[in-house]
Amino acid sequence: MNTEKKKLLIELYGEHTKHYVAVDCVIFGYVDGELKLLLYPRSFEPEKGNWSLLGGFVQENESADEAAARILKKTTGLGHIFMEQVSAFADPNRDEAARVISIGYYALIRIDEHDEEKIKEFGAEWFPFGKRPKLIFDHDEITEKALTKLQQKAGYQLVGPELLSEMFTLTQLRRLYEAIFQRTFDPGNFRKKVLSLEVLKRSNKKDSTESKKGAFFFSYIHEKAQEKDIGRIIKT
Amino acid sequence: MNTEKKKLLIELYGEHTKHYVAVDCVIFGYVDGELKLLLYPRSFEPEKGNWSLLGGFVQENESADEAAARILKKTTGLGHIFMEQVSAFADPNRDEAARVISIGYYALIRIDEHDEEKIKEFGAEWFPFGKRPKLIFDHDEITEKALTKLQQKAGYQLVGPELLSEMFTLTQLRRLYEAIFQRTFDPGNFRKKVLSLEVLKRSNKKDSTESKKGAFFFSYIHEKAQEKDIGRIIKT
DNA sequence: TCAAAAGTGTTGCTATTACACCCATGG
DNA sequence: CCATGGGTGTAATAGCAACACTTTTGA
Image (tube, rainbow over all chains, first blue to last red; front, side, top):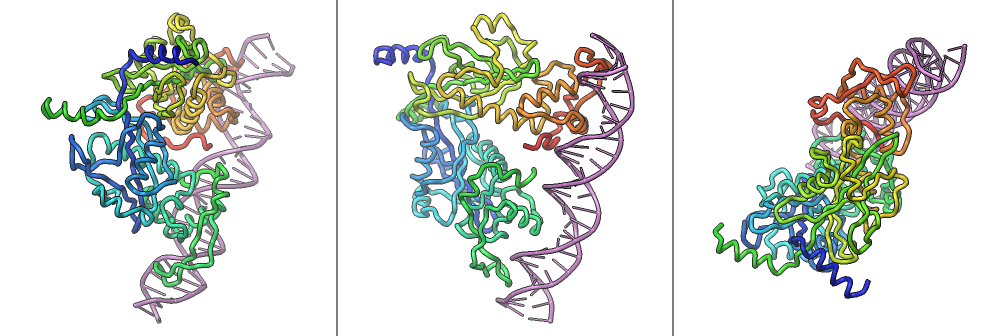
């Protein structure tokens, strides 16, 4: 298409309204048997100082995925993080200052690996999911939808590797699942189910901090896990 | 918040780029044992004349849901239609003429109820899902994601009422499910499964067009169906 | 009368649940 | 030496898939 023509088209589209488009990130972490949420005090009016999701505007030449990754990198120091889009939120009154259409994301990060300095610099804090403060605008709604999406994902694929460290015991993995699904799982049955997927490799190291006997550390076999369709793990 | 302050904020947001935001609708219908898709020839450049999803821009004071409903109403004459958001599509190069962020939706409509005149007026046509033409931009991707979402929904809730007429036989419902999931279901097992949900009411009328014996018409008990969590119907 | 769909019943298998029980060991 | 989590085994059950079989009636 030549420039002349392109100019014409832009004029054609031009009769329509343009909108601010932002991304808002629900950042999940996990530590001490609890699912956590990384929240930020909003740095400008309106709602300045109140807790909000990590957000930012989508710029000229980046996709929403790229915008979310850029903002996450800038504020946590982490790249190559698992992220997934939740949905778009486009109520014209969702942001009281101006119309901003937001695309919601959730991210899973290993709390022990992030850059604490950077997080402090922005005043961010980790909250237990169940004890999070009220958030600004529709961020509570975004957060709840994000948890639902996370549960869906965790129901079909093991989410251990994204939230735990490289090596973990099956009890740690079970507690993570208990945190995500807000229910308990039978230790024996959970172990059998998870091992039957054949995506975990047992190391010869043991963790002795959580029990007298000591529990073997497992790690994720990434290649095997890629093979699609390991089927439903948790029935909801 | 006073106007003075508000003005200031808008200026604050103002440093960021604004974007065109559109909605694109994957319109599913069902007739003659086939899942159908309603497609439109694009009315302006670029890609003028090529097949595309039904789309339109999100205006100043409407949500994306409202925009989708408005556009659907305008082009099919139908209101109160089941619609669900698929996801946002925000690749900066997805539309070759200008950057347009699109929010994808899918809709389920009863083919026999729509306004045929209106559809003709726009040159739209129904295509069997499996024999649809190549679509413009990323509309094929939107379409595939929409089918996945539809399958997810149909796996947990009966989608009969949205796509069939008020009264339907269990065989008709089964064929609809076979079309959605692109596989066959055992007639006996499907019947038992569906009836066990207790959301269908048998009428005393029979349909005699499809078999010698005649099959009872069923209708949907809307109140019962609203009760959340009828559980997984189809395991995928 | 018989093909073809409607509708019911039976059977075998698999996945899930609940729970019993042994193991190892730090306090 | 015993309480605690690690780890294995098992019996009861529920859900599902496969398919046999019976009913009805128009062509």
